[in-house]
Structures are given as structure tokens and as C-alpha cells.
Length: 73
Picture 1 (tube, rainbow, N blue to C red):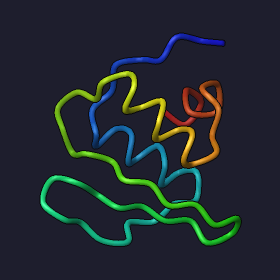
Picture 2 (picture 1 turned 135 degrees about the vertical axis):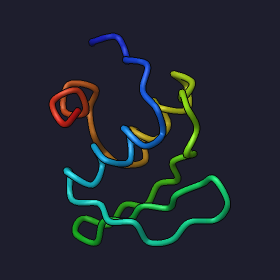
Picture 3 (picture 1 turned 90 degrees about the vertical axis):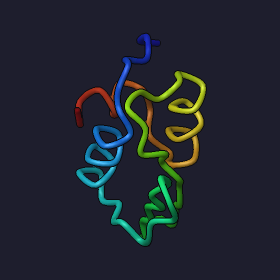
């Protein structure tokens, strides 16, 4: 398993959009992204740098692996 990179919330949201997610809504500094088929929804904080645990939770909710995510960056 590869080590998770340090990314911003905007970079993570852009990578998820490349994976088929769309911005559903935004509440403050949190962007809610949704994919319809297969259904998945995740919240990405629009912070300068995401903690690795937060990024790992986002990947788990989205159903993406670390290698897949790295390819989308």
C-alpha cells in the first residue's frame, strides 16, 4: 500500500470529480460530493491541507483505493 500524499481539500475534490463524483452542495468549508452509480457520498473539507486520517476516510467512503486516487491527482 502506498503512503498517502499531503493534498489540499481542493485537490482531493478535483480528483474525486475525475472519478465521477459531482459537487452536490457546499456547507461552509465542507464540499459534499456524490456519485450516483454506484452510489457514494463523501464530504471533503476545503482546507489548505487534509490530515491523512481524513483523506483515508474520504477514500474509504468513495470506494477508491490509494493507487486509484494517486492516478487521479
